[in-house]
Every structure is written in structure tokens, then in C-alpha cells.
Image (cartoon, rainbow, N blue to C red; front, side, top):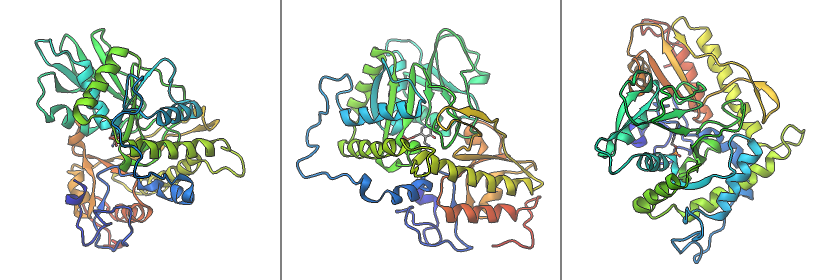
Length: 398
Ligand code: PMP
């Protein structure tokens, strides 16, 4: 839990991480979760444009659209999501079933259920190439389901028979653009495209896969609304995913869906002026923020003897009409020294997530770059003071 990781006296408020309390040299900086508060400044600039008014009689029924396969999906949200993908050109939406979930976290579990076979004798293996998003393992193992089981790194998977491979692109934690690695006929794929948005990576083509997961959390930064969506080719799979959500939560909050629809509507409208002098585009703004953070971080890493970061190629982005580099939401930082890097950073009051959680070694850590500015700058200050052998330079700001 976020709150447990914080020293509540000396950190950004745990119960309201978006409320600034001011950081001191003693503060713990929590860059473990990818809480996307970096984008708050854009939405603040939008003022009341995104305000959703919901009266006491609104949203009372369980049902949103009884004629639709996903009967709890609000038509306004479905239209806004299709409009968003048409604007960004990052995914095919034609001839797909859309399933809304309480975050893409719920949809991942719904997809596992939908792709496994209740009549099978054996549970189906779930794999993902390392370094993989740590939550897949946790979510797959949590209920000790007989339907599916976590089988770890897809690159080392050599068992015959059916399997589910999760392909995360761009990848969390390392920002790499990925394809499936097992490539066998019995394989079923889940593409997690949470970060396939212009602020993080060049949009090279509309994604066109069997099951694609997206989330409001990482596209706009509204993680608290808990809205995710799946674009699904196969009707039977979409129906089973819908059933899973029906049984686990009888649908998804209508208030959240309507708010998401409203915010996406404003975002789409603002994209129309992208690239012009009066542009107020969210993606232009957020790409600028991410680019600046990566420049500052690369500068610190360049001046250090012991850290390294992945490099990303420049690719043509169909959305911006430019060659751009990836600026992932996480830094996948490697320490060249033999050390438990997470513990080293913890000693400097920087909370990160160590490589072992992602299926690799302890010399790696994943660091969120989506925090508020103050925490990010303090993190850079502390990082630049680490000079090797865990030794902190004399100019250590602590
Ligand atoms: N997939 C990936 C790759 C993620 O990084 C995250 C969030 N950290 C999720 C899914 C979960 O997103 P949501 O907030 O929609 O549950």
C-alpha cells in the first residue's frame, strides 16, 4: 500500500499524494508506484472544462446499455474512447468488442479467466518476457486459481501445450517496444498497451491484436477513476471477460465512466489544434514534461560512473509527425557495481522497486518518473550525490 511505504511526517501526504506539503532534505521520496500526478498541472489549466455534474437521481441503475455485449459500458465512454483512438491512431477499434473494467488491472484478470478453459485438466501457464510488470505475477498467483498459473519469464518457457503470453509494449519497467517471444500455435496473447501514448513513445502504427488493454491511469493520468478498457476481437472472449466483471463487481462505476468520457472529450477537442501556435494539446504538453525529465535524468546518469539507462531509437511518430524518442514513465536504472540497488537508494530515502520483482537481478531498479516536480528534483539531487561503493559525496544534500 502507498501509505505503508511513506513516512507520513516527512513525505508528500500519503492519503492525498497530490496535496503538496513541501519536501525537506529528510523526506522520503516514494518512486515505487507509478502514480501519474505529473499530469495534474495540465488538468488544472483546464479549469472547469472537465467538471462533471452528477445529480442525486443520476446513475442509479446497474445497467448502461442492455443491447450491448458489455451491458455496463456507458455509450458516452465507448464513443469517447473510439474518438481518442481515432485521434491518436494507436489502435484499431473497428469490428472490436469493447469491455470496460475497474482499471486495466481488473481486465487483466478478466482476460486470464476468459482465455483459460474450466474443463481443462491442467491450469494454463501465464508467461511474460523478463523484465515483466511485477503485478502480473502477483495477480496471477493471488487466488491460487486452478485455471491458470504463473510460469515466469516467457523467454525461458519450454513447456508444450497451451499458454497465455502477456506482451507489454512499451514495456513496464524498461520502456522497450515488444513483440511476443514464444510464438507457438497453442499460444494466446494479451497485449497490455497501457503506455502506447504519444507522451511516452512514438506512435508508429495502429495496434491490431486479439486482446488489447488500455487504461485511463496512464493515458491521461486519472488513475483514481479506475477506468480501463479492452478491445477484443473474439466475441466469446469478450463475453467471458464481461461475465468475469459481472460476477466480481456487477459492472463498473457509472460516475467514473461519465467523468472519464467528459475528460476524454476535452482531450480530443484540444488535440484538434495540435502543432499550432494556440495548441493546448494534452499530448503536446505531457510529451514536453516527459522529455524534460528524461533530459535531466540522462544528464545526471552521464555524469555518474556507476549508473546506466536503456537507450531508445528515434522513430517516426504518426501522431506528432516527427521523429521522436521514447520517454517512458519509468526509468530502468542499472547500477554497475555489485550491490542491492534498491537498498542503496533506500538508504538515501528514495523508495524504488528492485529488479527481482520484475524477474531479473538486484542491480536494477524501476523508478517512477511520473511524480510531482518537487519529488523528481529532489530525487535527482540525491542520485547525483551517490558516487560509487555506496559512497555519498561531500556535497551530499542530505
Ligand atoms: N498495465 C501496466 C503495464 C501498468 O503499468 C499498469 C499500472 N501501473 C496497469 C496495467 C494497471 O493499470 P490500472 O491503473 O488501469 O489498473
